[in-house]
Image 1 (cartoon, helix red, strand yellow):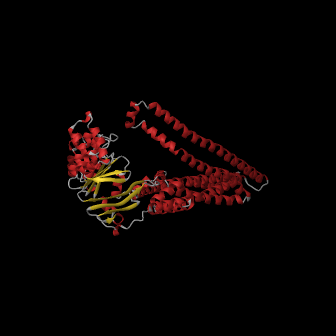
Image 2 (cartoon, one colour):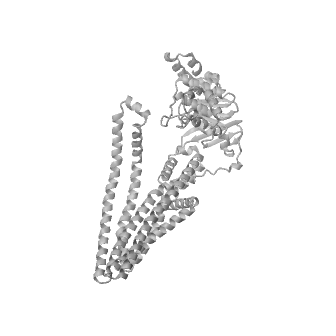
Image 3 (cartoon, rainbow, N blue to C red):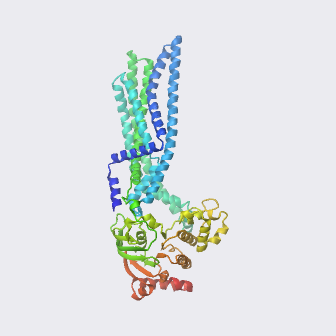
Amino acid sequence: MEEEQILTTQKEEKPFKAFVRSQIYFLKLIYKEYPKSFLLFGLLVLLSSICPPLIVLVNKETIDRISTINGDSNAFKYALFFLLIYFILNYATAIFTEIENYIFTKISITVNYVLKALMSKKLIQIPLKEFENSVFYDSMKLADMAIGGNCIRVIQNLIYVVGSIISLVGIFGILLTIHWSLPFALFLSTLPGILLAFWSKIKGYHMEKDISEKEREMHFTDTLFTDKRSLKEIKIYNLGNYLLNKWKVLFKYTQDKKMSLALWELKSRSFAAFVLQVASMGVSVFLVYQIFDAKLSIGSYVALLTAVTTVQGLFGTIGGNLGTIFETAIYNNALLSILNYSENKKENSHLIKINNIENITLKNASFCYPNSSTKVLDNVSLKINKGDNISIVGYNGSGKTTLAYCILGLFDLEEGELKVNNNVVHTIDINSFLSKTSAIFQDFMRYKYSIRENIGFGDLSKLYNDNEIYEVLKKVGLDSKLSNYVDGLDTYLTKELPNGTELSGGEWQKIALARAFMKESDLIILDEPTAALDPISELKVFETFYRLSKNKTTLTISHRIGPTKRSDLIIVMDKGKVVEQGTFEELINNQGLFYKMYESQSVWYKDDLLKSKEISSVLV
């Protein structure tokens, strides 16, 4: 509950305050990683900002000198001198810009790497329960998009805005020497463009938000045509035309929205350009009148006309940069909320280390998923002692897997308490506890990595211990498979990579078992990983599991009744509650829910197509 309050506080922070906080964070991070490069970048932007006013002045002098040459060698020399300075300033501006881009590209690569690493590390630390919270999940996606969109570009844009303002001040100073109204007229002429650019960013954000759901559906539909798993069903059920038409409808919907925004932007930019040109024409006429009145030289006219164009360009740059800053602010704020996420847990030095698991106790445990009041676990109590072989059975949705997550401390209880070795879970070092556990879940990972990694992930200290890996492969019956692979343990388990291979469902089950038993665990949980297997394959998995977990504490979760015959204790769950518990014989004699499940599955396994004694003796 404490973590949810922290998230809520972060989301309720005022946007401007959150924006300032995020930019200070990124600024400190940039300066920490590249202090000299960042200062050099700032210096170059400052020098680039000084150049435009100087170019205007040098341009004026150049043209004035050229207009007075008339065979005067001194005037000719001065003209060449100012012409040289003019091109040097333009070249310097171009070079400064290129160096700025190079420096910030270097900074961006490193800082984005650091941010991605920090975010990944933080996501590992965040309680698993938060990933069931749609609000948190959306924040996580926005944060990932912030890094992908180069979030620190905002800092670059802010610095460029400051640089543009410095240039404007310099040029405005020159324009004020002609007439006080010129800077204000130019500012007012660019104001519609700036405001419309902001409004365009706002409309763009809302448009993206409106079509995001349809775009996700469109992307999912698109991937169906490139995934060999889906292509099988597309061919079998003749889904090609239906899915293609579905994609076309989604594409048209999203593109219509985008084109509607593009049309609005076209009209708004055309209007802004019209206002800008009218103002430019007005200023030009005013300057011509100044020449007519002998108050302005030809050089001054050309230079000031250049200044007008430069000012309008600078205002456009400022508007574009501010629009980009506004557009990315929401992503950056989400990123910072993830990076600053805190569980307020005790320091590791004060936590109790778990060296071995003697017992685990749940007392009056209840649990609800985020944004839901429904109790997935309701007042559950149980005790697991060292060496116990316990089975948890129940229909789908009865809370079995959630109970496993709570036992492992992956989910914090809403009510009740979890104890390990008679210590409340919040007083123990959870990592030391998890280091003594292994689990094979129904949705176990099928890493598109090598065999070595798929198994070695069970205990990273043994990742390059070939003897250990071969030994566990032999135990699960996959050792003979290696002789078919040129790369041996380094063979990738995907056809998407060179020399890779694909495994069957049963073989993947064995890989998951091997990964779990690479670790010296006191507690091993088997959570319905065989649900998609045929009975014979399921039987073999269970036999391997029981053989390898002998003398260990085991917790098997299943809706199958047969494997529970080997259990010391069977816990029967229904709608989040423990409705029965006892041995196989005791529960059969009680003729409660367990007996009903047994009877319904007995009928299935007595079917003429499944008369195998091997199945009926173990799985019934």
